[in-house]
Length: 427
Image (cartoon, rainbow, N blue to C red; front, side, top):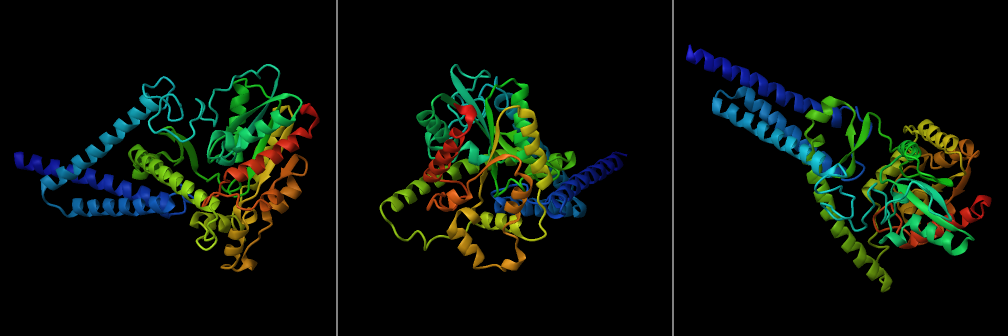
């Protein structure tokens, strides 16, 4: 009787573990290899993600085979406690994130709260996560005109310091050359698409933030392709990350777990610190007149994939979503509204354009698809196209990066500031 009971318990445990291993493997296949998500869930670190995905899939299949073939109870119990340990860690990290990180009242504080952080950023941000050293008031400061800038990481700022980033340069230029006082409210969020910027604008308006004008940056490198179907964004470890909308994938795919996302944020943090040092060394070498930069240049693989996704004939583009978001902001803002078109690296950087074209069949690409669409559909809006300005700005990108360096930010900010000073309402 006891032996029969033990047999049933072992059989029940084997069925349970088989189901768990199978569910994990299925979730990995659906998310990463079935086409359910039209593009990788990460914009960067894609090679790392897929390496981890393959490892996770192989481990789940190996455990599945072990569970099915094993006749020893202690092996089944070992695998069972392995899952218990993993999901216990996951639960602890999720509770930690909720109670200590993802709330202003958390004991450790928000990742972007410059007073109390886990991993300090080179450029601390305010409590809303915006790239500014102070919190914006809802009311426009006395005797000032406020312009809200919406967009992605280009708007957020890629300068080596806050004062050398795009929005701060616009603000400095306006105050130095205008006949009034101005505040630029930098509401740029890295990774945001026009759709998400539209949602952020509606949030700011609902929260009664006042403004005199709105400027939306339209970055051609990814704004038409960044809204990935079947995904949404959520802050984990205080960093906005992409997750599938499907609850099954969110809960059972191990790379959607908070343990993995925390490990990834930590790894990226130390990687950023190393890249900052390398960038500084490269800038010093360039300033000293080193002439080997062109020889060592190579198009970043992510940049190459972006260009292919943007311009290959037959690729999907989010034109309707971009237009509805732009028209929604213009319709609801009730104030002057401007669009600043920022070119991708293919048009902005001659070195990248020349190297990319040397290795592809140009007949398979439509390199003017975005500009033709903008000319046809956005001619009703006040629009400043920065393509020619960026093209004429030599050495204005960070090394192996799609973002502008300090020189590029200065060029972009001063031209946009000059354009705004030409508008009647600013005086």
